[in-house]
Amino acid sequence: TSCRRWRGCRWRRRRRSSRRQGGAPANVAIAVARLGGGAAFVGKLGDDEFGRMLAAILRDNGVDDGGVVFDAGARTALAFVTLRADGEREFMFYRNPSADMLLTHAELNVELIKRAAVFHYGSISLIAEPCRSAHLRAMEIAKEAGALLSYDPNLREALWPSREEARTKILSIWDQADIVKVSEVELEFLTGIDSVEDDVVMKLWRPTMKLLLVTLGDQGCKYYARDFRGAVPSYKVQQVDTTGAGDAFVGALLRRIVQDPSSLQDQKKLEEAIKFANACGAITATKKGAIPSLPTEVEVLKLMESA
Ligand code: ATP
Image (tube, rainbow, N blue to C red):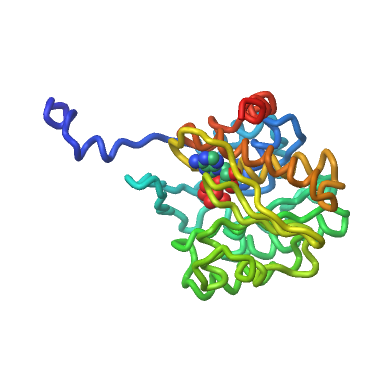
């Protein structure tokens, strides 16, 4: 593998890879912390080099890791993300089972969860027991303590036994969430209709919700609240890698909602919060990887002012 032809050949270039740390809810937690908010993470890691490194990354980025537990008998979850020439991503997972799937409800840091103003989660933790029950219990604890529940399904089809099971289980907790964010791909997966028209999005609306969002990449997003709805365009940037843009968007929006909860009832305030979230997502799309691209508040405001 040391010959010059090998080093320069297209085959090798296409297979260049780098190690990047993250995972959707962890990215959201770090996004919040980088914007100056308080954030904590709940989950299970392998008691291995990767697991300890990930916990250190959370701490180094200002995220409370008091909800992290380690499993001595399982490895930290590992995913290969391939960036295709068209900019889309493909995921391949090594989970057999991985430590995250083994979190039990008895291992939840209940006091930490009770302190949350917002409890944010995805759907990967719903796939297998015992993590599924731990996830459901954590949602209950947070809700009882008065937190807003925020749900980004983060569909990863390859992890589910079937598309049908993915759809059913993702929707099984739909009614509990106060804030839900889906991508265009998730909207189509969940409704079966390839359209972002309002009547299609409204199939995912529930009267119990406070806010439903559909993110549209460089087009920004559409939002649906109880008494109003609309669309907010994003900012023009040079797109390099959209990994983490959705998480940055969610982190920024949740940060603004925690700073002023009345944004959920006031259309003008909500649109300002969404502009901030769009700018945060846009900046994240300008660099490779998720965590290194997450911006500070100063960077986000700079983009908003320059537009
Ligand atoms: P993910 O791919 O991370 O699971 P997602 O599909 O929701 O989530 P995107 O829609 O790609 O993520 O991005 C989230 C938000 O970030 C968008 O709604 C938009 O505001 C902003 N954004 C993403 N890509 C760009 C871009 N190229 N230019 C401007 N804004 C962008």
